[in-house]
Image (cartoon, rainbow, N blue to C red):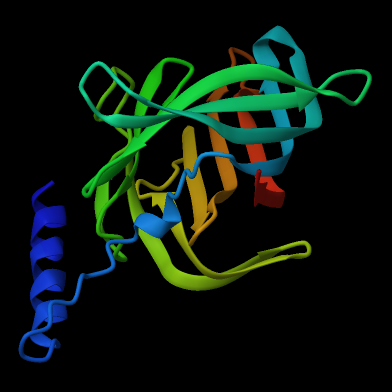
Length: 226
């Protein structure tokens, strides 16, 4: 976190040096990329696939997913948090709850708890090159991610976003292990796309390549607030 602190201090000095006498300008830390306002929602198109060559198993699925902030509450640590209901459509095209996640944000970080796994999703301030361990709060293997393309316009279908930032893993894939992670956030909206891919490729006893892994793509198709 040392790099993060140094960058924050530098950005604060620059921001304050530009103020006129008697004025105090609050630096933009990038909190708008993780708004989580009560009643806000985002609908995604989700495409997922998996492959297990040794077991001769593979498959794919596509569906719509709706994430909605339904409640503000205070957690056991005294932090202001939000509860997120995640819905999918049933056979009658009705939204039904599939998961309940939670999230919280303070001046330095934004976190979510997904399937009981606590993740450090964003670090503030948002600046290109700032990096952190996504799994610092859980027991999963370290996954270093960093900001790329800060304040970049981006579009998906009919949706156009003026300011987005990309969170991407920093360790490149090799010929055996591929572990890709990308999430894009839009200012005032939240996460608008997600890409995860984890595969392991090995040779079997006959010298044939075998792949075990999965892939997930999510892209926002609509958003709003009730």
